Image (cartoon, rainbow, N blue to C red; front, top):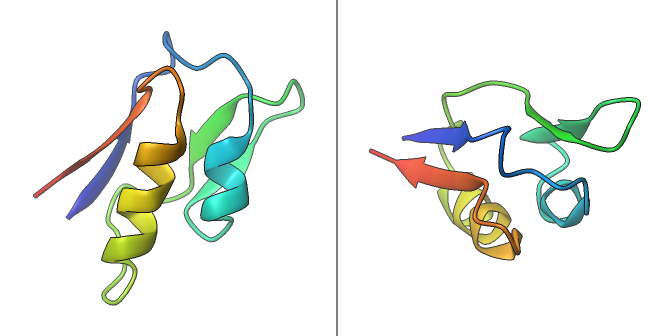
Length: 63
């Protein structure tokens, strides 16, 4: 499973990082950066919650 970011959609709300600080970090301007595309085993639900929390659909989970 992968957590993918479309950085052109990110508006820097930071909600994703609140849900999954182990998967997403914020840059110096508050925009999301995925730490590792591969979602660790056991973090699948966290990755989905992270993607679902984005109001601009900048994050998505793929198998």
